Image 1: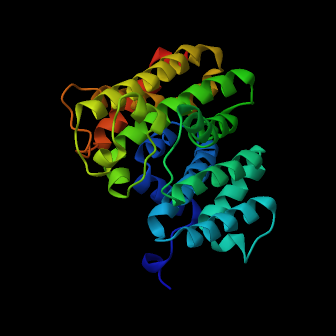
Image 2: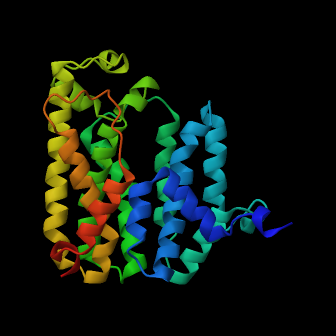
Length: 287
């Protein structure tokens, strides 16, 4: 096999996967040292693999089987060689090199089983639990790659993950509604008398606008709290929270008056890079 036809190495595979499916997190890794960047890319590639399962299967059972493979891998039971899966190989390397705890990785897989079904998210409390085990857990693990664990990191990570997760739900509402999936809590819809079927039909109603404004308000509160806590964590850990700069920018765009929530937002990779570069040089994330 010639060099041009050679398959990419595991690191390149993970980098390409994250760059293609989670560009803000990919861009954030560009500001990390080489060893830490490799581990971050493994972590984020693992997350991409888990999140993508719902789009790769038409029925829950095949998705459950894929999730079980990852659960078995993390518990030490491997079906076949983990080295045959570039993401698995890199993830195991990151776990070993940075002493990452396996439990939150397994819990992340478990929580994403919710994605395989069309059950609506019932309450804001339930959503916070889901996001704490997914988005917030990624912040905690990323920070652990960058520095020692601490209560301060755990605290900021919870709020960071809630802010990021809510913004992601608002952003992906057009896609989720088309698949009759509802991550916006039923409790919130009911409080504004917003009919779920109207959302699934893509109707931009005043009721839905009221729901999303309150929902965005929740994200703003969590984002403000997370940013206010940055000074309490070591400078090395703050780089793990660089994606918050993109969350802030996205939230500003999503909160624009008159925005149709069912019009997919076209994101600019160049703008994302500029946003994160500016944040990486700011006192907020470095001092």
